Length: 374
Image 1 (cartoon, rainbow, N blue to C red):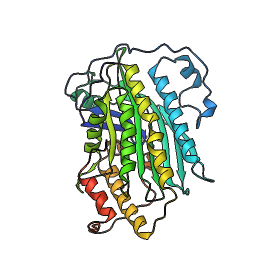
Image 2: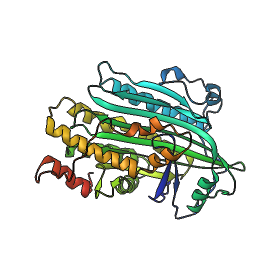
Image 3: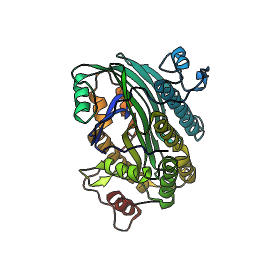
Image 4: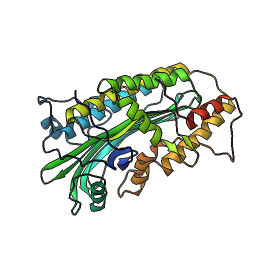
């Protein structure tokens, strides 16, 4: 398989509807080609049992079933599948708590399904959201895209479509890391031509460093990447390390993972296959870590440290995360879904420094100096 060409790390995520689900404009180092007709795999029309998902789809069922080869339909069905798989796996770890399902509509086109679980024995807060939005790309946004290399006519509004799945999981036990993942598809139509790309990533934020956990996490992601290109993991791991930085603290948010945006080569089916493998790797990455630590003892000191580190999580999301910032400034945005990424509880302490040689100090060393884990 020919390699997908990687574009710049300096991409700007645009959020419409939920959290970091959604679309990116990037600083590109080459002129992007226009995809007049995407290469697709012929998929026979068939009825899909949408009753098995968390809610009915945003797009009309008749349209999804009538356009099985269209990437918009394929992506929407896939993110519904991922949402259901993640929610089922997390609910299995709880006794009586179930996800609250909120299917919402966006006034200017599309909508989403927000699934939120709070106050469980294992998870203090866990959200798994999808959004499928469409409408007219504002001229200003098109101008930003054109300035970064996209071949768009920035003089007029353009039809766009964006779909993605995003999740943030905040466990109760400080020995279990927080997990975030996001996978998305974006498409712009211009005079019958289509410009499209994918983006996403999965990253881990531990409160106490278990090196075997981190090696397992990164090793699982590497396997997903290596199925498509042996250079992906290294490139996307560095991209992740460079993106999730709390700059005013001089530290990373967590121990990284993978992160990428603006991927549109070698062809649509190949990139979609890569996206699917990455999303399917989330549970194998994370579930063994949860089961390993969910019943471990912890005390007041560990809980206080967890809350301090969650404060750093809040700082990154509100100060630096491009998707969150753009979403909060976007008209008709789904604010509750955007802020779902924040932990339910957090704390700040003036001039706090962990004791030298402590487990907390061991974590800080890795956050300030990222390591290669596999």
